[in-house]
Length: 161
Image 1 (spheres, one colour):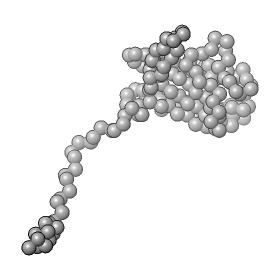
Image 2 (cartoon, rainbow, N blue to C red):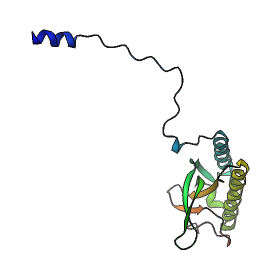
Image 3 (cartoon, rainbow, N blue to C red):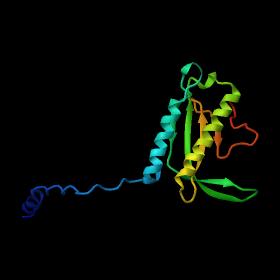
C-alpha cells in the first residue's frame, strides 16, 4: 500500500513554468554602475577623448581608459581629521606615445586632463559636488600618478623619470 501511495505522488506532471514578467526588473548591484544618465554620458566622453589623444609620431598616449562608478573616498584634513568626499575614479593606462613625451609635457598633459575633468564634473552641478580622482598607470600596473588635487609644485607624476 505504501509503495502505491509513493508512486502516485512521484508521477505527478511538472507544474508549468511561471509566466514571464511584463516589466523589466531594475539592474542588481548598481553600486558598481554609473546610473545617472548625464554622468554615464560624461564617462563615455572622457573615455573616447582619452583614447583619441596622440603623442609624437601619432602613437596613442593612452591604451586604455576606465571611468568607474562614483565612490566615497576618505581624504585626510590635518592630523587625525578625515572627511569623505564623493569622487569619480578615472584610470588611464599609458600607451606607446607616452614614452615619447618629455617629462614637462607629461606633467602638462596630466594637469590639463585633471583641470578638464574637474570643469566637466562641476558643470553637472551634483550635490554634493563630485570631484575626479585621476590615476595614471603603465600597462604593467605601475602607478605613475594618483591625483585628487594638483600639486602646487607641478610634480604630479612619480616613478616615470
